[in-house]
Image (cartoon, rainbow, N blue to C red; front, side, top):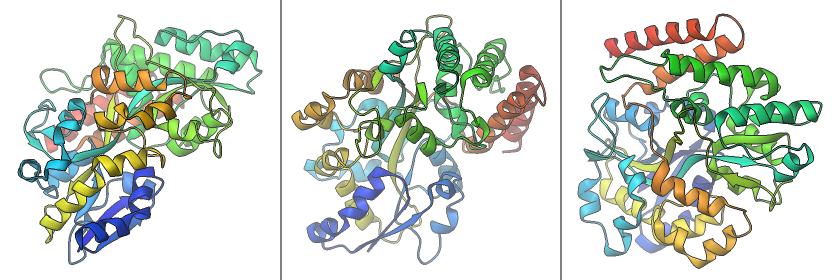
Amino acid sequence: MVLFFAPDTDAFVESVCRHLDEFTEQTGIVARTKIIPSDAYFSNDIHAYLDGEDAADVFMSGPVLLWEHIGAGYVEPLDDFVSSASEHFDFADFFPSLIAANRWTGQFGAQLGTGTLWEIPVNCEAYNLAYVPATLERLRCDVPQTWADYFDIAGRIAKRSDNKVRGFGQRGVQVWHTMYTGYATQFWAYGATDFDADGKCAIASPQGIAATTDFIDALRVSGPADWLNQRWYELARDFATEIYGLIVDSDHYTAMYENPEMSLIHGRTGYALPPLGPTGERVSNLWTWSLVMNSRSAHKHDAWRFIEWASSKAFLLRSAFEGNMNPTRKSIWDHERFRQAAKGWGDFYDVGRRLIAHDAKVLVTPTPHYLRLADRWVAGIRSAFSRECSVAEALESAAADIDKLVREN
């Protein structure tokens, strides 16, 4: 018996639910699912589902979320399971960058890529630049190459369209991932960081203040009309209906942008690497949506069989055509069927593969309490946007609170 716990509004989860009988047919192991709303899941307050008589055996997580579960003792190390995995599992087929993102010693500030393997990636997202070429051409704007270009062109899009098209899309609600996607990709490109070498919060550095000031100034001019209430799913949907000209956010939104049933821009969306920062640096934050074994599971052997099935080459290839972007295995990117499908998506293939293989990495500093830190950071950004205080005051206050949280934990 295996219980799989996951959020709704996720294409990989939908693929698992759709094909769950296949797992039982192949293994003889009965599998069940427990699915809850995405917003509740991403709050990460899910330990009640990971404990007790009906505890989940396998659940979805990723960097930031996972670190909290490791600290609370809900994650089973997977190195031994990988070592004894069946030959067809082919662990080496996963992109090294994605495996590195899921290895950690558990110590605050320790770089990812060393220590224990905690989860198996089944989709990933880096943060590319997506744009609508027809909108840029109609409004006489070029594809931005730098973050300064990006904000300038976003302003021109809004002005020249009389705000019928907003310049750029960006998440804005009071949740941790408001800072994790486009904002973090811009923030680190400015040479800023969250913590310095001594473990002190550094978001209020001159570079951090400059990055956030440019970000907030641009939001007021050309960002979402209701930025403080902008959630990720609606953001992607709105971009697909030509409400924005530009966006730096998840590159697995491509599954929505290129779906003719959901998008007005399918087959005519542009994709590029994220813009360069003031010093010429290009970075992209990275996220992997991954399978985790619950350390409280009473069925660890069966749980690993489920993880092998749901992260296998065959399953992930099929799920890529059911909206589960981006593939985490090299063999799927190399597969002729996937290459052919991606041919109609502009430069998505080249940009996406380059990000996964070379440019993207988890930028934030690992700590079991990062969600609380990120939440406080987002509150600071929002307060500056609302003019409750200056950008410098907002970030300095947030940094002081974050240092206190780190000391307490």
